[in-house]
Length: 344
Length: 282
Image (cartoon, rainbow over all chains, first blue to last red; front, side):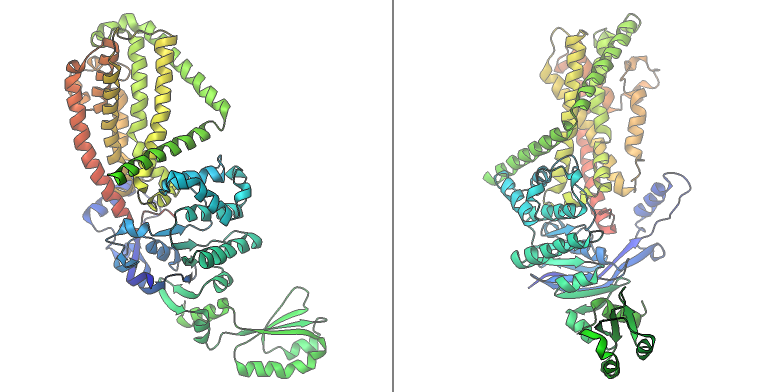
């Protein structure tokens, strides 16, 4: 069952002048433009954020939205949560058109604005803040306290529930964002860049919350926009790659890998001692990278013939090899090849 | 019926939570709470001294309002506090929620717009009423400025509510300009014009009879002028409903018309913002 459907969606934004003649001139200009209805029709002053988007998102699926900055990832999330309406085409949430049932479709979804932390009073504790949001999200008074405790527990914030928000770390604040979203009891979540600016350990906790709690335990549908492609690879069933507002490729990670002939496999060689000059020369034809101690060498091979060439060389340095692994190309590599192919 | 009742109860509960949250924030720094009280006391005392000093001169213009300039000023101070809180109330609500990104979070809730308005009203008017009660207490009980011998406090509260409602309806028009005219930087034409005209035309510090005769009709077009006149007549002269009927009619009609226009404009502005992609700030 599809919970979200994008049908030929196009969304554009008007561009504004950066500087004006005098304070308030933008008010007069936009007044005449808006009154005359020319605000968004003038292509010269607008930019297409999304073009011809056709997507179907199934219930319980975790779908990754990836692409360079400005590709339209956040716009796509906002459209899914009815915080924007499409200029052309339609977005459906559980079969309802967002243009006609805006309030209803919006109340079926929840957007988590990534690293942006707002709507919490720094002087109050997470518990008090969440009680406040429980009232906003229409949680009946009798259930509010229990629900807040449940959200704190699922996000691992129970212990700091009474500490002032101003003393919480970035990782805890991001968890508090997620706890607030849990209160609203929505089954479709759009999460924008959840781990940006977080240390690796906090990021790992956020990822395990999304995987273990949201996807596995609660069975929610998750749209995850991220620049961290290994995160997308770890969490998502399917990936949508956006470039300049268009979907370039969409499907499971295996499918996307299979569509790219030249994405390189990574061969990692762990060595007992660094390679000598003569041994390095043997590998000259390959794309290489070293770790700091030069005892770990990554060799990237684009196809079977290159892999065979590499394997033919290895006996010459086999006395130094303590471990060897061959990995599929990482998503980053695959998407880079795709981006280069379409000329992005 | 039971469902409607539970919705109303929930709204009451919501307001209680906002007020409780606000109270916790307000009392997070207790010293500033005490300093606020002292600030109010000395403000009232200064107005009282000014009023007492000028009463012999100003009294001739104050026949309709009890003839004591200190009382005239203190009542004006209370009413003006409500008016000042109301001019830009909805504009500031939309503006602050927009720039802090909370607007998105409120709109994600089913009755988010209503919740946001209730919260703002509760927070602003509880603060203002506390201030008004303190000014009233310091001015008329502690310092001893005279009131009318018999004051109809219910009528006083109704007139105050009606005046605030009239100004709030202007505030709705003002809030819709945030998106309609893209007036996001604090320069909003409707409330700007109203707040600019008020000190001169509304009679906060002097009775409107002092103004040149040619300007007086203009002054009586403002709801604040009618509100202030009615409030003063009830509190300082002991007027009844019949004595202030013309002011009540003006305020009621003004509220009805402007609130209808304001509500329609506000809803249209949000819908338009949603369409052109202006609603979420991030």
